[in-house]
Image (cartoon, rainbow, N blue to C red):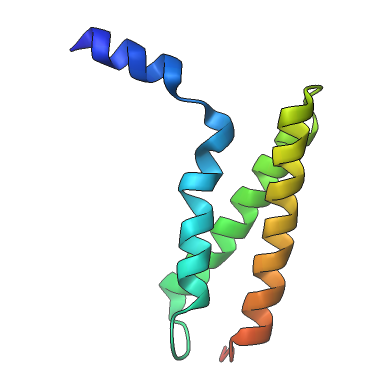
Length: 92
């Protein structure tokens, strides 16, 4: 069991974590019909903040691969923010 966990730990790269967690959730939130409730709004805000945080963190690295992913995460946060404000009818 521990050997399996060690192999998983070696193959897991935290650089790709937002690609598998936040971006699919943000895409899902784009296609929800009707007005949002508080949970969906909070999920959208936390997702955008996580993308901004991970983008800024990766941009501080000196490796080109990390900087590229930092640009992808920051631009996707801006893109999801713009698209959700354009496609949503917010009722506060």
